Length: 272
Image 1: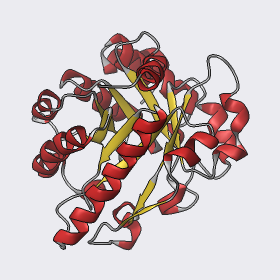
Image 2 (image 1 turned 30 degrees about the vertical axis):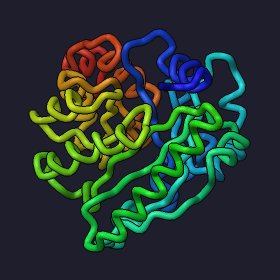
Image 3 (image 1 turned 45 degrees about the vertical axis):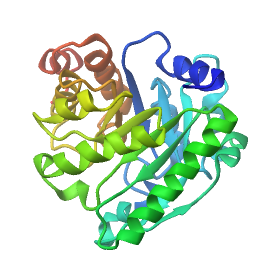
């Protein structure tokens, strides 16, 4: 059962809406400065209309004013670093280590935290260690009353076909919930994604992964995930590398929150 603090902070994140739109800007932890995120404070201001913004633990200090207002997005800070996220180096393992504890994230202003869980590594001990770190994240967030998103991100997921991730995501999301995550973030796996959302007792959020070829494809990805039972999206590159991040974010909110058809919304906002 969630603590009062966890419940209050989750309600603030959803703010009376059934679904949420979060923008991730923590890519610098793994890829360095990517296009659209070179000047992070400038990028952050362009997505201030999101329900939440996901960042690395050292970055809120550089753009904290975005979170000052009553209507500001909720700040989500990542707790652990996994080698599998550094896709450009083609790592085959996922060694997870702490970046900050939950108390440290709270000191930086976090409303929520996120912890990653990657399983099916070449070494069983590696899997066990990843579960140990994830469980410790859950233990700490309960003590402080901070909601936690559990991220299920299979190694090499960025480059795999959605359907090839189904079994890993199906099992991993349930594991993350069983370990105590309040929400789960993972890859949309195609038509079978509804099996993931039905089997997971906490809200599932679909991540955007690599930038889609066209902006309308991002809207369609969001719509498909929502149709399959997702309770929101966490997009990064698809928003920040858009021609107009503000415009695409507004369009995504209409698809996710109002269940509008992606093609209709794309036409409304002049997106290709």
